[in-house]
Image (tube, rainbow, N blue to C red; front, side, top):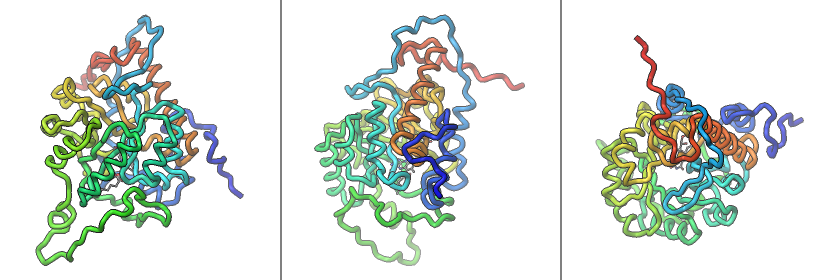
Length: 371
Ligand SMILES: Cc1cc2nc3c(=O)[nH]c(=O)nc-3n(C[C@H](O)[C@H](O)[C@H](O)COP(=O)(O)O)c2cc1C
Ligand SMILES: CCCCCCC(=O)C(=O)O
């Protein structure tokens, strides 16, 4: 007997995004759970992403007239109803049989921008036909650069409106929890958009050669690839995975239009700084010349408000909606977006913000003295 509620129902005890993980857990096998829910190595950065938001305190503002307020914004000339975008997530069929098509339906219903991964488990053209939501394409440059450019052309032709190049994961991080679970892609789930990619020949390692420096990193993208992409596409170019002021400035020089301050949800290099801690100096250095987005650790509307207060124009969320997808399909994703948006609006009203333009660093209370 199946005691789980139907996949199209929101569990009764879910009142916040953080209530979804236990409902996702019971629907997923150990293999999928290890991939979806883990971070790199000791998972310190993954945990710190959320903990760093929790350490920040807001400052209320009372008696403000916020009638007629809204959360609309423009990014790269595109209008968004709210600043919460769905981060790129690979292989969404691990979470739900309809994978990215289910997520795209939810993005459509909740007016959320969606970033589709190179490693999507559905074809990017099929996803684009499924939704009227603003779609961006996340690019992992492939060893075959001509094939990579074909992917960009496919995304352009399918109507994707920005190119998000992920720069912080040229090789996989040390994913111990995946290793312990023996993570593998089940039959029928794979990177369908990479089908037909020419194989990259690779000789066995010679004595003294390094698997990292002499194999895995030999095809990794460099700043030259970013400059080449810049001249090859008219789409806004966004670099995802920037954590330092130096790299943010370099992104500007390379012709990027935007960056995502991100540590990949703590999935690549453990003990990196939390994304929200990394954000302020980067926003101060380049925020007037680049569109600065951020992701990592967002589970509450107050987290969104804090990120915008510290200089992000908009945020992306990853696991929060992915747990919703696993627990309740498109309805779960839509519910998570709705919860976060409602919480954001409440937080704006209680801090005296009528629009996103009213959000500033003044909304953060000074850190309490501990001496
Ligand atoms: C299961 C999973 C798969 C991911 N796949 C990708 C991907 O294909 N490309 C990418 O740029 N980022 C990927 N990410 C990272 C997210 O885009 C995002 O940076 C991260 O999830 C944000 O942190 P959060 O999960 O705490 O919101 C993935 C994250 C998760 C959890
Ligand atoms: C070589 C990097 C593999 C990353 C796979 C997808 C991703 O971004 C993630 O799992 O996180």
